[in-house]
Structure formats: C-alpha cells, structure tokens
Amino acid sequence: MKSRLRTDLLLLAGVCGFLFFYQLKIFGLVGADEPRYAQVAREMLERHDWITPVLGGKAWLEKPIFYYWQAMICYVVFGVSDWAARIPSGVDATLMVAASYMFLRRFRRGSELDGSLMIASCAATIGFARAAATDMPLASMLSIAMISWYAWRESNERRYLAAFYIFLGIATLAKGPVAPFLAAAIVLAFAVVVRDWTLPRRMIWRPGILLFIAVTLPWYIAVEIRNPEFFRVFILEHNLARFGTDLYRHKQPFWYFIPVALLGLVPWIVLLVTALGENARALWSERRQRFKPEDEYNIFLLIWLFLPIVFFSISQSKLPGYILPALPAGALILAEYVRRRLANESDMHPILAGCHALVAAGILVPSILASYIVSEDRSQWLRNGPVLAIVWLLFATGITLLLTRRRGLRYLHFVTLAPVIVAVSALLRIGGPGVNLNLSQRPVAQQLSLVAENSLPTAVMGVPRDKEYGLAFYRNMPISRYERGEIPSQEHLLVAPENSQADMARYIGNRSVRYLGSFPAQHIEFYRVTSQVTP
Image (cartoon, rainbow, N blue to C red):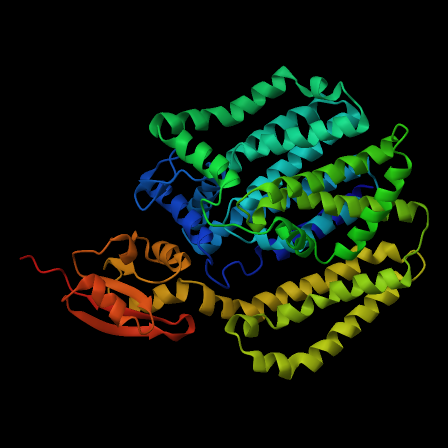
C-alpha cells in the first residue's frame, strides 16, 4: 500500500511539474492582467510594503493580497521575472490536485489517481495554473475548502471542518467575499436538496469561525486603516458594481459560461456529459424518497459544479476565470462515475470510447497549429491539415482500442493524459515563440532597449491595455497614455500604432519627433519625442 502511494505521488508530481511549470518562461506575460499583477507584487516588494497593493506608485485596490504575497516570496527566492510571477498559480494548482488525491484516497478509495489526474489535465486547470493571476489561487483554495467540508460531513471529524474554515479564509484573501458567498450557497443548496435541515447549524463552529477571522481580518483591517477608500473601491466597485453592471465592459450573453465550461473541461467533456446524464436519471428516479449516502456525494458535486456557473451567468460582467472554482467538481463527478463502473465491471461502449478519443486526440491539432493561428498564417493550416488529420485519427484509434478492451476504463487516465502531454509540449515549443512575438510585450521592451535608454520615460497612444501594462512591467516604470492627457513634458519614448503620425500631431503639437523603428509583428512603431519648450 505504501509503495502504491509513493508511486502515485511521484506520478502526480511529475504530471503537475510538467503541466504547470514546464517552460514557464518560453513566452512573456500576455494580456493586461498578467503584467499588471506581476508589477503590483514587484512594487510592493520594492517598497517593503506587505499591506497595500501598489501600481505605478499608487494604491491598486482591485484585488486582495494573497497572490501578491505569493509572488513577492517567489521574487525573493528566484528574482523578479515573468516566469517567477507565474509560479504561485502552479503551486496552488498542485495543492488542489494533492488535496483531491488525499480526499479521494480516504473517502472514495480506487478513484484517487483518476480524480486527481483529471483535475490536473483539464484545459482550464493547465491554462490558469500557468498564469500570473488571481483566478487559480481562488479556485484552488475554495476547492480545498469544499473538499474539506464534505470530508467533515462524511466523517464528522472536526479537523476537516477546521481545514474548511482555514482554506475558506485564504480563498477570501485571494479574491474577496465571493469565496464565502459561494461556499455558503453550495452548502445551503445541498442541505435543501438532501433535506438535512440541521446541517447549516452544525457547521457553524466557533473555533472554525475564529480560524476564518484570524486568517482574513488582519489584512482587511490593516489595508482599510491605511487606505480609507478600500471599502468603496474593492467592495462596492470591484465586487458589487462588477456583478450588477457592465462597469468594466466585460458584458457577454447569458449562455457565455456554457461553452467556457465545456472548453475548460476538455479533454474529459464527452465522458463528463455521459456521467451527468446517468446521475440525473438516477437522482430523478429517487426524487420521492431519501437519497442514498453515495448519491448525496454526487448531489454535492453537481451543486458545486452548476451553482457558480448559474450565479456568474446572472452577472453583468463575465470573464472566463470566474467559473474556474466550479470545474474541479466536474472532474470529481467523472472520477466517481469511473469508480462505480469499474466496481460493477462495466465496459465502455465503443461509440462512447470513440467520441472521447476524438476529443482527447483532437487537442493535438490546435496545439500544433498554435504558432500559425497566432500569426494568422492560414496557408500553413491548409498545408499541414492532411498530416494532422492522419495523426489525429491514429491517436483516436489507439485510444478507442485500449478503452474498449475488457476493463479498459483502468487505462482511461493514461491514454487520455498521453495526448494532453504531447499537446502541451507542442503548444509550448511550437506555439510559444509565436505567442511571445505576437502577444507579449517582452520582445517589444527588448527592442525598445536597443533604440533608447531604459531610463527614458515611456508613453503609449492608440494601443490596447495589454501593451500599456506589459511595458510597465518589462520597463519597470509607469506608462503614460496620451488619450488620458498624460503627455510627459520631458523627452520620452512613444509607442503607437503604425501610420499614426496624424493622431500623434494632435497631442504633441510642434514638438520634435524622431522615428526610432518598428515592431512589425504587433504593428507598432517607436518614436522619440523631445521635451516641451517652456514659453
């Protein structure tokens, strides 16, 4: 038994190490959020301030502190870099996988390796585990809290309830009041469905509440004392207003999170839909009587999966990371489905195996084409299409043959993990340089350093936010924006879209401008603007 545990843990360590940490620096920070969060942690470290998030020398109170603390520690250990800023999410994802394994080993023996590997290999887990952002810290801590809560319900051991309150507190430090709200909503909905009316009262445990308060309140009190605007900015604007209005322009249709969840649960989505269908039929047939204990576990997971998706679908502001805390429940539902089928010695239907194999092997295609997709080189898609189709079908055929063998479900995590690992490797090695060249500001900042001094102030005009925040991190300075009226009076660099001289002239008037070069991959140009003449 100990040798099996050791083997499983070594396998999980290897899988998590590869999926979450391999080639973290192959491309620079992308989007607006990654460089912004990474720069906040750097400025806090430079100021030796562990309380107030700071960006551009000003308080930045949009998110709580947990990710910043983690990133600051990584900077101290590894130095300030883009890949170090991504380590916290990978660590948190690994903790979530490990906690899932230990939970399943204790309470659902036989599914521990399946469940933990399914969580680790979901597309959403891999993607957010490699991002310098607050989404994975919240998802990980809240998932561990919910696992701990159900462990307490099954065992009635207070140590699990204590763990629930501790990790719920950390989740609150990761993203704010959404964590306790979702946890309370899931627990209450579960109590109603299983008709256990004493459950909410029994889980209100004073030592646990004190643990939650000890974890969360010190920082919230400290940041409010130092920044009296914190409550207005963080609670009222970035929680309530973000949910109830389209204040930050992230409006999406009501059904937006359905395709997001489906993509996030690739490559397991075909089997998960099958498991959901079987669970729905079984629970519907028992609706008029008391649910069995083994069915209550599935009910808990179903509520955990669907309630956050429904809740955030109501929100006027939608981003893919919002439903990340719900997706581990989907993997656990599938793990329980596989465990039961193996226990009943049920084999997989060839059509179901084939559909799963097509999806699992299908992830190879976009991963290999990633560099062409980013660069919009459609001719390469056509030239490589037939070869990729053959590779796809060969992989899918092999997976199908293994799964349709006698007790083929035993091989499920291995045959599915193989194309995932190949796809991630291809995506990084083939697509990574293209992502870096076309989407990250790291090469842009490197090009700027060749044409002008690194100390020269920098401004942008007419470019997306990701360039503004990316340059702020890679040049380690506040970036001015002409459209906001932030036109430096001293000599400075300007990053602007190609052929935008006419727009530039409206802002700088008769100041002298010298063209320094361009970065064709991102369609931007560099200029040196002289200092403003004092009349």
